[in-house]
Amino acid sequence: MSRILSFLFIYSLLIFQGKYVFSETPLIQEQAGTFPVILSAPHGGRDKNLIKGIPAREGKGVKLFRVKPDKNTDILARKTADILKKRYGLSPYMVIAGFPRKQVDVNRERANAYEDERMKPYYDGYHGKLSGYVSRCAEKFGSCLLVDIHGQGKKNSVIYRGTRKGKSVTGLVKRSGTSSVWGPKSVAGVFEKKGYTVLPGSGFDEKNYQGGYILDQYGTHRPGGADSIQLEFGGDFRKAGSALDKTASDLADAIYIFYNEYLKSKAGKVR
Image (cartoon, rainbow, N blue to C red; front, side, top):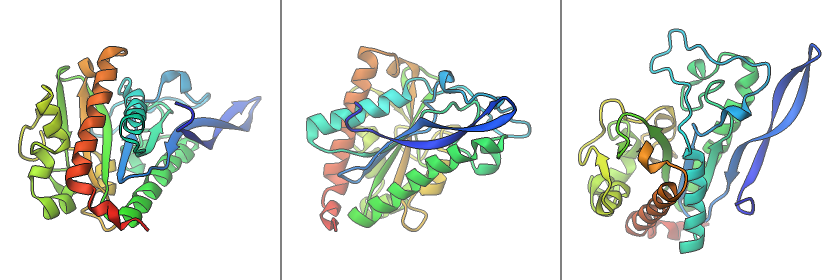
């Protein structure tokens, strides 16, 4: 795994004998890609990576406040990237947060993302890397897919698909129609063929699973954006072991089939 990942070392502020000590900490994992797909996993950070001296967020006045991690979504992203490389010879761009959501949530606008200014470098580091990859991917390939990987606890055997009510896939729908979002060769459609329940089966988004700040910031409703979907995986699909391995394998297949159908011809624009 370490061979395909590089770490963005960002400075964390630690309190030591009343002074700030700068410590380089590998809490953002990232890699540059070779084809027009970007994986984002903003909520997989573990409590073991809590930054010392910085309290957990309280979320006063923040809507949809959450601090629990989306368990194993970081591993799901890495495994998916590994399988894409080994099975298809393709490496996605990828950004994974290792820092805990208790202290900063990078899927929120800045005002609601952190409560201690010492977490600002983590927020800026994640979005700096992700925005850079979105720009690079769009410039290099013309059209790109961003898959924002999350977990949900409402229905353990369901995947929720979000697109900001279609806004974050504006370019994709304009080029290829809505079948590219929920048709048989869409990412969601491939999962359905493999026996998964994906909601909604058609149409744009369940009420509470429409996607968050990342989709709003980087979708193709914005110039230079990437067609962006959020996948919220139920707990059954994120259990460590064979279940997680299968989910990663199926996600890699879904991405590859989507790529061949909707992106490969565009990838000829490499420059």
